[in-house]
Length: 197
Image 1 (tube, rainbow, N blue to C red):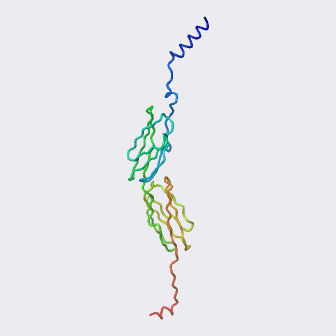
Image 2: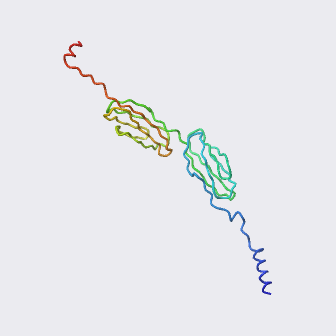
Image 3: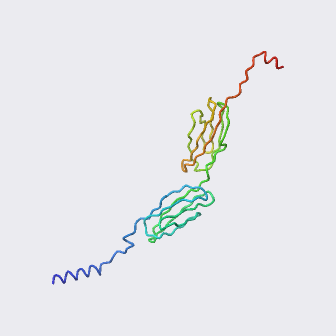
């Protein structure tokens, strides 16, 4: 009798208890790497989507996406400078979004300059993220740094100097070459001056 009750109980548990679906068991939070992308126009960036329930659907505002396998994708940025997003959605309706900045390249003008000792010069810095830092040479003095302008002063030592400007977001580097030289000194005594005239 006890055995019969036990078997009936087991039968009831296995047939009447609602079962969890496979998708409920395997569902995990969807994620994307990288979450933020800084790139240039018409370039590619690898994106990885993890978790959730593949396969994934995706949509982007202006770029393109190519799928390489179930979790790996290639983002192709548009030809213009802008902001973009790529959103991935899994079968369960979970979404995750990567934010993308498409920046124009960092430019510095001029890249070469010749200065007298102690002379000042101004350089234009454009593009990139707008946030850049300077690694300066010891014989040059940074006089002024503004958003798009850099003013330096040559030291008293002649020779070639370099200033490295690096975009703080993209890591892009530009090098300025500055040749510092002494002014030509002409010394004449008074009799020599009289002879000239």
